Image 1 (cartoon, rainbow, N blue to C red):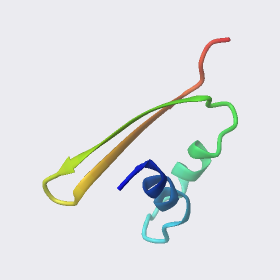
Image 2: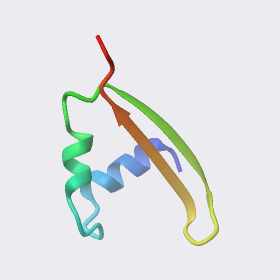
Image 3: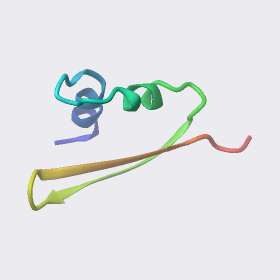
Image 4: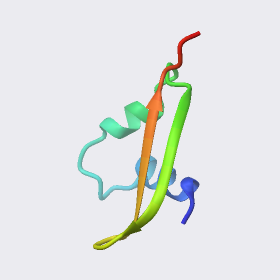
Length: 56
């Protein structure tokens, strides 16, 4: 599973209760991201995405 899979899940997955993640992902002020994808003992895979606004 790659990053595009996780982004699609965060944007359209009806199983996610809150929608705050959509506002964060679509925030036009955030312009850099750090991503890590790895194994998880319970879910199989985990993805962590850190979004930031860089200084210009």
